[in-house]
Image 1 (cartoon, rainbow, N blue to C red):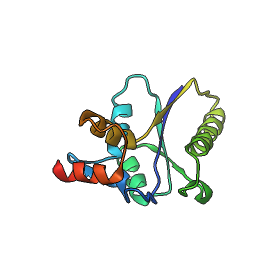
Image 2: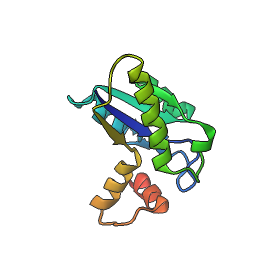
Image 3: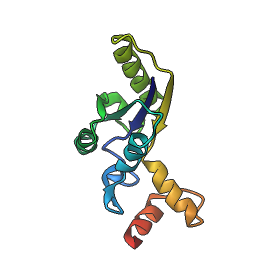
Length: 137
């Protein structure tokens, strides 16, 4: 089974609420969900988050929600640890249904912001620059 996991938390310091910022009529976190939903290869989609608004977006698209523990919802938490937690959660869930993970796809909504910045010629990500780009859209 090919599973996609999106990670996003509520407490971004560089750009508060970036995952639920409106970009071209959708929340930023909707874009990776839609990409995964439109993929013919992804069997299940999961979101690891502590943010009620991100959870609402996921529920609207019938995505599986993983409640992220508080220790993994801080600015000090490593993305690798968040991914590991999500992976183990999914693995245990699928094992209980006699299914196995064939591949994991990591979905990140901030990659859209990096792509936007890259297409404008900016090579480093900056939340200040990203805010200016959003204002210009």
